[in-house]
Length: 180
Image 1 (cartoon, helix red, strand yellow):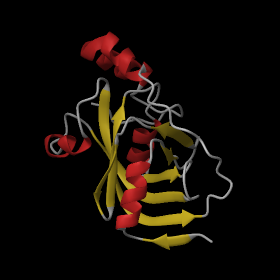
Image 2 (cartoon, helix red, strand yellow):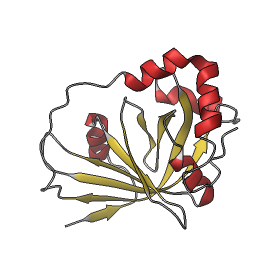
Image 3 (spheres, helix red, strand yellow):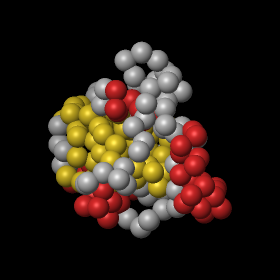
């Protein structure tokens, strides 16, 4: 049976810290739902009611566009290796970019600099849901892919800025993503 709470507990924090992958879902009022897998140790618990992740440049920027339009965000993690569990965070989010005033204060909370980093996604928790996860299979973690980081290093800061200007300024449905 699904259980809802509003604050992260110590047990939630332990579960989150063990996860190697998480999923981010967002949607505009009209248009496509976006669901993206994330990794690279970019997720952070900031308080019992606030989480966030360091967003690295990718092929699109759907989450930022959807957050700019309506703020709705769902984050999900599930256990692939131990006791079954699905953990969802329902939140209201926003993007913080390197040109924003609070970047300097917030960015150090997300670990070492990553080539290609684009923005922080911050989420104010509205509710948390746990459910059984009995149907989630076992998987073994074998390591992170270096492809995205290698790509960003090869392109360099100017090349990544150009890529973002060409591919990350709006969603696939034409919504502005708010990149500066």
